[in-house]
Length: 347
Image (cartoon, rainbow, N blue to C red):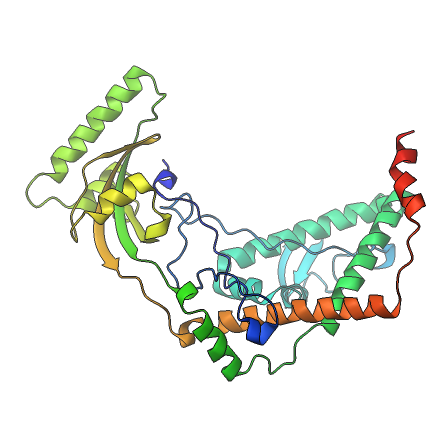
């Protein structure tokens, strides 16, 4: 059963654009950093299975390199995974991870399940490549043309990244301090609530028999909760499948649905709400603890802030490089040919 409906879905965006004095670009509102309360997304009571990072565009495959999954033998000590005759070695995995962004690398380092899924994805890709080569599918004219376009795009992107990379020592600690001070208000972490929940599924469009059965279950749970010495966690575990006593963890005030928020804000610590009716069923909340809104220190957001400042500077440098390149080599467009391009394609 789902508890997603009590929490509004929120997307954590990291730290957004920062001080113009450092980046030469306008400042926009900062999103919450990792020091902010974690964004609780549906479903709340179960951590969703992590998704592997998106694979990057492959260069045009060649039969001489893609016919074999790896140069390592099946008995090689550094083979970390194998399916059929296809292997992924430790070097393969290191090379793949090295090509990812810093945040994706950190996520893989922290999450063993995500790393396992990434290896599975690599194995699947190897199997597909073997099939591609065996069928000579990559030699079809339309495929080779598309691969060449992808190769050109990848080369351009990699080159632009190299010419727009900020110096290794950027930003300085002084720069970061200025950015932090200029954006303190945007870094404010909202009030947080540690909540536990008992959920009784009862969709509003359910038939009468289903609704009556759910109401009976709800009444029984309420009776247990009102008994002297009632243990909310035990009751939640018994009625919700033993899911950590119904604990939802820490939830930011802004992420809680309004009809739930008003009830939670009125609760004392360790108090339990009356049943709250939502479209999916009945929700009973317990307020375990509360954290007041606060502004994280520079130390807490240092790394995320540095990453964002570097990303913003790289964007500025990229735009400047392209502008100068076009200035040195002004493009000449045949406007007449362009205007008739799509007209001719429709004939």
